[in-house]
Amino acid sequence: MSKSLRWRMALLITAAIAISYFDRQTLPVAIRAIQREFPVSNTQFSQLQAAFLAAYALMYAVSGKLIDVLGTRKGFLLIMLWWSLACASQGFATSVGVLAGSLFLLGMGEGGGFPAATKAMAEWFPASERSTAMGLMNAGTAVGAVAAPPLIAITLAHLNWRWVFFLAGAVGLAWTLWWITEYHPPASHPRLSAEERLEIAEVLDKKAESTRAIRWIDLLKYPQVAGLVTAKFLSDAAWYFYIFWLPKYLYDVHHFDTKQVGYFAWIPYAAAGIGSLLGGWFSSRLIKGGHSVNFSRKAALGISAGVMPLILLVSHSPVQLVIVLFSIAFAGQQSWSTLVMTLPSDIFPSSMVGSVAGMVGFGGAMGGIVFGLVVGRLLDHGFGYGPVFACVSMMHLTGFCVILLAIRVIRPIDFKTAPALSEASSICK
Image (cartoon, rainbow, N blue to C red; front, side, top):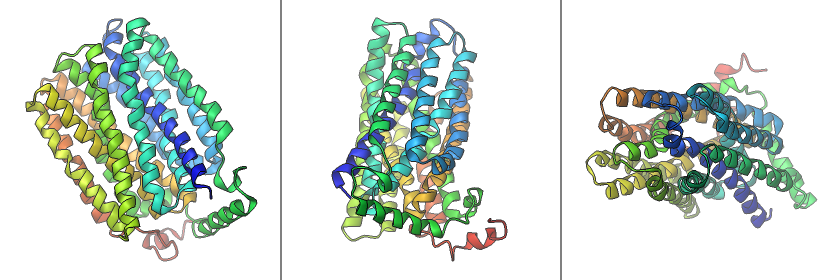
């Protein structure tokens, strides 16, 4: 298979993830301008996040199966069309309630983004390159988030805040034209030879033989899935706090204005992109150096989790060091996220990767909902950010321990001998 074609597909998928994270940053960065038209308290701000994440969690769980049924090409197209229109609809908001409705619709669309992207990467990349490709894809989150603060600040300086959402939606719609023109699964891609397509189709059919009897809901009986869902619940509780509350933290504690947020808030996201690339590269490098997939993934995960407690220092640091500490945390988080979202494709065949990735993402979004609501309450009741940083400092390390316990060895599941299969055999069709 053409290596350049593989990486061309990776770039296309990365662009979609970049757009999704740009869209997520529109509200946190524009919130100060929105508050000039109608009030939004800390509790209401956390409820807006919950509206997004509730829909995101539900769609993350079911969209993986939807992608498996529709196929990556058609499924990703529908997802991007939905979330781009939903993002643009925020520009028509006149109250917190209307804004919450738009965010709910945005969450429904974006909930399918990572399962579709994960499945597409599993279709195109072998295990030795997969974490590098996933690192590139996850770096797209940083590209979108880095671009958001300065571009939104420029838009706010020259146009009404509503144009932030209209323009963001337009970019997503433009991407769909690129996608429908360029993307095909490798088994049917017109730029591959007939022999290459036949070889890929045979491999996929062989993998599907052992999984055809496994129902989507039965996947939850496997400790590998339960462990990944739990670990993602913990780590994404911290991550969604970072991405939704960083601009507001700078507004509230360091008294930044919109221009200053635009000037500084992109830096941690740039570090997140570096973390995504380094985590994926480091794991792939260990594999190519002769280490097992199990050792390579867990070593990189452990290092990523190990830097996260440094965030405890934020509450006692000057603003310059605060940006550095956030940057370290963002880099560690996105290195971690790259590796966690690579594990489904290490353990499960491509025909099931979308479903498993959806369940894992559902766990992450639920963590964001629960912890986000707790943060809003704590801040509105005068507790400050100190207890919040104490909580998020330990979430990745706890998640790493969960993975070590639930996934003793990272390797493809043999569904003919796996214990959970015999438990579920009586209800499988």
